[in-house]
Amino acid sequence: MRLLLIRHGQTPGNVLGRLDTERPGPGLTDLGLRQAAAIPEALRSDPIDAIFVSTLLRTQLTAHPLAADRGLDLQVAAGLHEIEAGALEGLRDRASVRTYLETAVAWGSGDLDKRMPGAHDGHEFFWRFDADIAVAAADADVAAVFSHGAAIRVWTAARAQNVPATFAGENELDNTGVVELTGSPEEGWTLLSWAGLPVGGMALADLSAADPLGEPLDD
Image 1 (cartoon, helix red, strand yellow):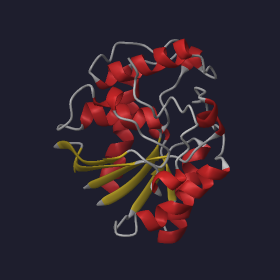
Image 2 (cartoon, rainbow, N blue to C red):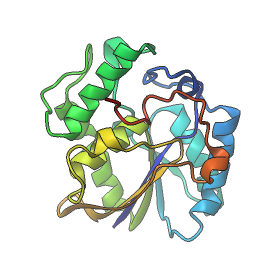
Image 3 (cartoon, rainbow, N blue to C red):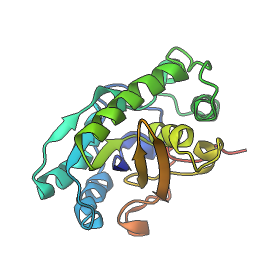
Image 4 (spheres, rainbow, N blue to C red):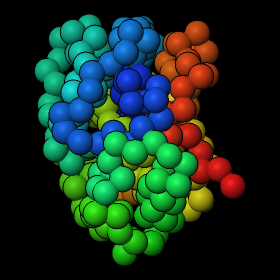
């Protein structure tokens, strides 16, 4: 199957650089709504037959234009939500953001025992995310899965067979960036493309936003 992992549109937390992972979470900014509206045309050539979203409001708002365009229902999957920030929730200082990113990137590199402060370890993250990707794979030939910056980056780094373990920490994923893979849960996944910018290109990017969940881990 083909799997399109799509990050949600911009949120107020992305603009402020805040770790914002609690349910149901914020909606989209005006720019985020424009980013979402650009998705149907950007994916016009993709024969999508199922759309999955997380429990966070921002993925559902981002997916709505595509669902309306294709006449598809949104299938809410609890395992697709963002990596929980735990004790770091709501923080935006450099040290807290770095701790969050270092922990998440460690999971993508195989250190699943490392625990997010006040939250889960990597085993829990992959258990839930893998489970819902398996549902998507069983339900569709081409699935659009709307999820979150850190979750998409970490899962792809760990599950795509053709990228290095350092991939999650080295590649940005802007709001409405699209990651395309092919494969299956049984046979594994191959990364076909990583479009880290918004689907509408730089015209829909916000270079002033801090957006820690989509940015590479700095040195």
